Length: 357
Image 1 (cartoon, rainbow, N blue to C red):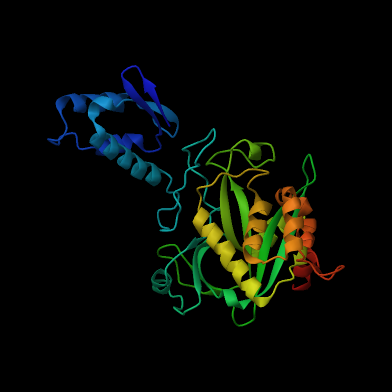
Image 2 (cartoon, helix red, strand yellow):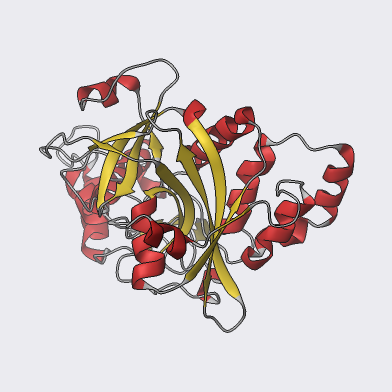
């Protein structure tokens, strides 16, 4: 953001690491005149700590070079200030990009977007290096983050889960469960430095797009979700973790609907979900209606499935339903993605998991 002051441009910049950036600027360099050094000292004395939007000062007399260097140092220091787990190289170091908390650190201790990593990185942590595998960081399981090697071609079922929870209006959270064929399950190893390279195989992974508060920020609610209070995480989580949170802890009902997809569509749906999460990172704002769990789930589905002209026309005419989690069954039926009658309905998640005990 910039605006013009009486003596030139005045910049408003998020200052999560401004003190560090200014301290790192080479004041003793011959390239900086005495007057510029004085300006820097004055700026340092005027800058408050913390992450808030403030006026840095009148930078025009310093010239473009020092301004750019100061901004680069600021960005580096600000990023470092949001490092919540120094032992985890995949810590996203994320700031909320806009809204009333712009520049404050997102709370990524549990909620992070998935991240695609190279085969070499995964191999260095003990995962198999094979063509056709996707390698993901920040996969959440057993209250830890893991690296995972996943074969998209092994997806044998794509299942929509709808978690109903009490609110001032009927409300729900939606997510996408991927079930993998026996013997071809994702393999996980802990991603933190120094952690034992224990291997875990999971039959299911859950793709869940969720609101992320800033550190010490507001708990989620529908109204604050429309007021730019949250960032967005495109998560990949184990089914056991989601079951423990939704059913065991929150006592919510979770219904399950198996999507009517071909093997190719199941594979491509997983790939599209991963690409959307990796591309989005932690850079997007959450919105209760415009960007939520359901809009992003449907986005991945619509990137995958080739609809008939008639289905496309109906889909486009009912676009508003894509933002309403409780209407997801109707949204899927319009697209022809549910079997006739109750053919797509599976047991609720609590009944399924209790039957496996």
